[in-house]
Image 1 (cartoon, helix red, strand yellow):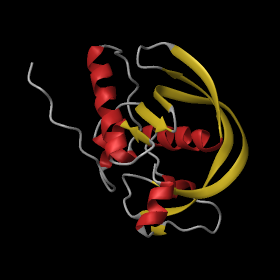
Image 2 (cartoon, helix red, strand yellow; image 1 turned 90 degrees about the vertical axis):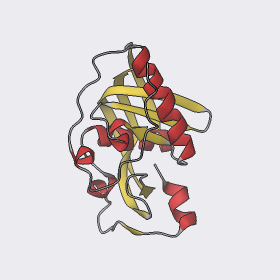
Image 3 (cartoon, one colour; image 1 turned 45 degrees about the vertical axis):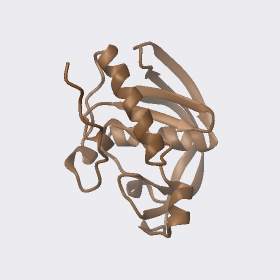
Image 4 (cartoon, one colour; image 1 turned 30 degrees about the vertical axis):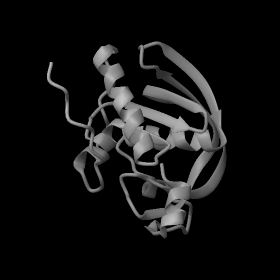
Length: 166
């Protein structure tokens, strides 16, 4: 089998970033290889999450790499949410820009893991923010569409961008 080329980051205004992605239906070795490659790229690009559409794949698949946590969400569905918090957020697919985005402070999500097993898990704080950000990508939504009232999505300095990149 011929090795596939490395994944490349897709940036706005690419069409794939603005479409609802297809659900993952096949949980096999090729999906696990793809996930491994996405983990590598996410860390290489200094992200904390990376969704399928961000690498040109129309799949409801995202990897999350945050602190000591590393996991995959496929076909996520938010079951509940509470609290709201505004914080600066950026996106790998919108390089050099960030804005104050409103997200839920706590979310409970049902998703499938890389093996296809159903998981229901609650997240809070920054991890909840990351899960929501990546889930939005799978619905064709980018973070500027969730700006806090009065906020703007604008160019940022390198140190500001790194603090909020997703």
